[in-house]
Image 1 (cartoon, rainbow, N blue to C red):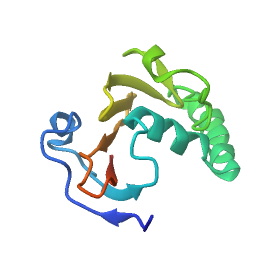
Image 2: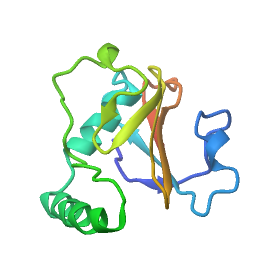
Image 3: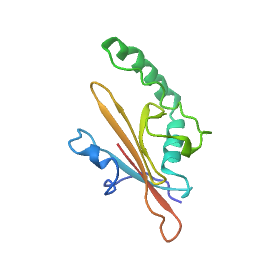
Amino acid sequence: MNTTVHPCPPPPHSAIALHASGADFVDCHQVQVRDPQRTALRHLLTMLAATPPWLDNLMKLRNQLVQAVGLKDLGSLARVDLARPDEDYQPGDRVGIFTLLANSEDEVLVADQDKHLDVFLAVTRLPLTADGTRTVVLRR
């Protein structure tokens, strides 16, 4: 299976669409996945858990520096519990540096909102194709 990530248009009717209007930056990519039964949340958790250590170290430095100007400490991108069942996640729970806003098998929406910046991230599973493959779309 080809696991190349490709730019794509945002999926119509996605939960993040409400937040994208007027955004300064919108990015959307898709990939065919090897595990078509994995939920959107599980794709997000797996991706966050795989954050390279150097990037998490930059987050630690960022957190130390921005507290001096009144911005919040976001914590670690990779700090997720892969053993926690998907159904235990509820809106308002922390997922890495994000807050869970919405969660279904096919789409998860998380965000971080602070004084200077609102970041929304969605992972959407598209329907299974006739050959049993599935595409997952990441939009931020």
